[in-house]
Image (cartoon, rainbow, N blue to C red; front, side, top):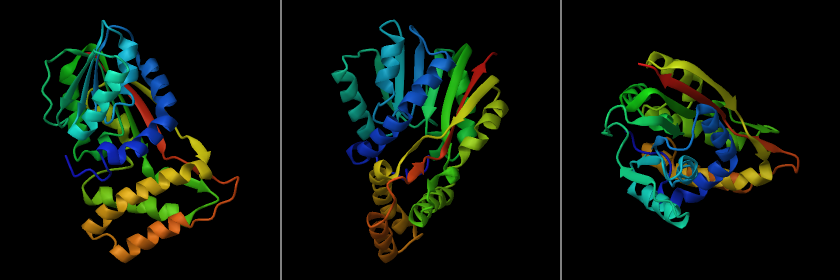
Length: 267
């Protein structure tokens, strides 16, 4: 697994919460369509701070189980606290990379990940490996972006520059932040059957989006400097440009298109 481009733990919590506030309702509807139900054993890969974990655990109930995996112990500390506050005892938190995960074969009803494969250097291998954990008829449900599809209205050069920097940082680490448009084919080539899905692309006002944009910029800047992609002076100017950005009251921010694809292991 490559170095994570964005912050984890408390430092990245607000950004992750913002993402879930925007995408959460779509993710919950997606998992319901994928067949999430009471009594299942669900594997959540890259659970992060647990924004989806607690909801999944409540849905599968006491007769079900959630195995929540993340490579960051800082993230898992936050997720455990959220589970404790919700009074949930049916979650097993596992600190592991998805590449080195070791679970009993044929034990999982549903494997789920959101914005995980984009951070892996060999995502096809990972989704292929997940099949051995699934029961016959078990499902994998993935949500991944096409980062290049981010738009604003009216067009905003500062946000486009930031997004381009983010995509280039990924490329330099061997990552594909446009993986969403390849997700269907990837699952098909990995042996999953009866694939189906859709694309979602939420839109919010620029006034609501600007805080999220600034959080992302603050996290990306140090990594971009470290990688040599930008100098310190240019990075500081980028942040200033974003902070001083003018926008109209009716301007809006369109998140990157996100693919939601589910496939089944029928062998």
